[in-house]
Length: 179
Image (cartoon, rainbow, N blue to C red; front, top):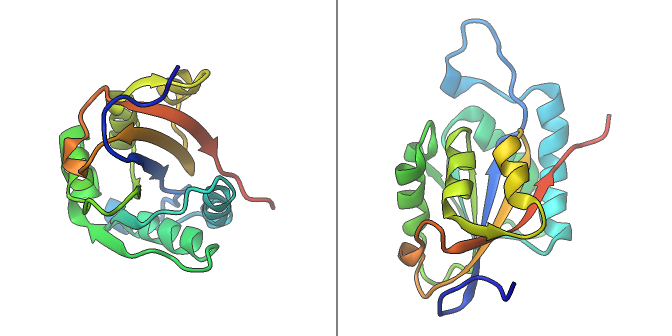
């Protein structure tokens, strides 16, 4: 395999599913916080991204409490967190909405992080990936658990050029904290 098709600079879309959330009684879905395991796993996701050399130039994050907390705990592991845009349309989004959010990224962004929810994130990864290294596509197709990270590589001049089937799924990481 030679790598992602297309022309232009190599770009990375890093998809992070929020960490494990709690289910407090009477709390609306959008307001659910992270569970104790999620508070351990989110920093592990940040460390995993740093270790893989995948620190983003920009993050797009759902406005849901659990996604915002995942972002805050993950980026606290980095020396210099990138700018973040909290996007209401990423919450409970389907593939077209998520793709619209990704395509809104400025051309100068080489690595974009998307923090959101399933099933939309899993569907987006499977939709964009024309191929995967090793068994990465199978991993996402079977389960994309909380704190999972999928890395898609593609070549393009602008994010709005990203289309289904044009990216290569290069890595899947399931971040877990100790304790």
